[in-house]
Amino acid sequence: MIKLTRRWIKSRRDGGDDKLSLPTRDDPSLDDSRPIDTKEQENMVLYFERKQAEQSFLWRSVFAAFLCCFATFLVFSILYQALYPWELRYHAYFMDEIDSWVVISADSVAVFACLMAIFGLLQSSESHRQWIWYSCYCGILLAVFWLYYMLRMPKFRWDIVWLPFGPLSAAGICLYVDHLLTESSKEVRKLRNYMYAYKTT
Image 1 (cartoon, rainbow, N blue to C red):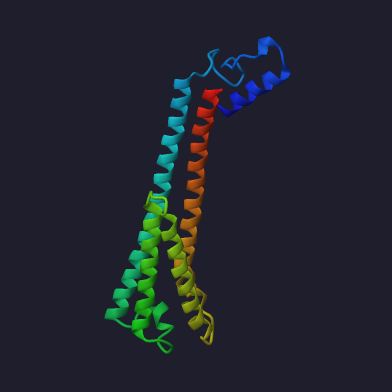
Image 2 (image 1 turned 60 degrees about the vertical axis):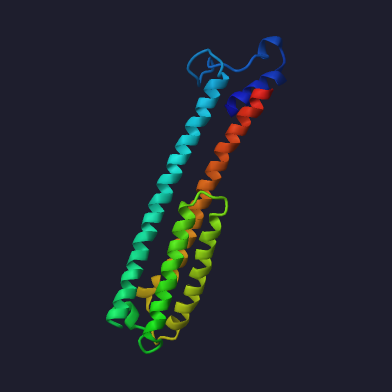
């Protein structure tokens, strides 16, 4: 539709009474010789809106599912640490540095960060992104907490680098996905606005 509008404007610039008509489907890239009427424009925009909504739901659900898996793993870590303290290797590294309840608290904050990111990703309200930002803030606090104790170790343990950066990375990815899908939705809305502007000319 935007291409048709541009061709129509270009035809007006070129001059000539025979070029003042709307572009038709007789163009090489189109199928037949009929101009696109109002109903066809509406159907085309509705198609793009429906496809965008389907893609948005799909990708939000996929990343929310990944976050649910990560949150479930963290809940397992909390229960295991509570029942069998320091049995998990990635927790045992800190047994000489911090108390067991501190580890449980840190993992609990990570679970809440994941839940906030999931909530923000699946919400359709205007303020849904603030929940993902809250998750990012929690992730930053967790990253500072875990890195502080990891840097105090005699040897830096790369195998547990996901502890400080796991929740933060998950929230950052959710923020990026939400940004892309929101921009896509804006483009579709812009297409509808172009349609109405085109109809009034």
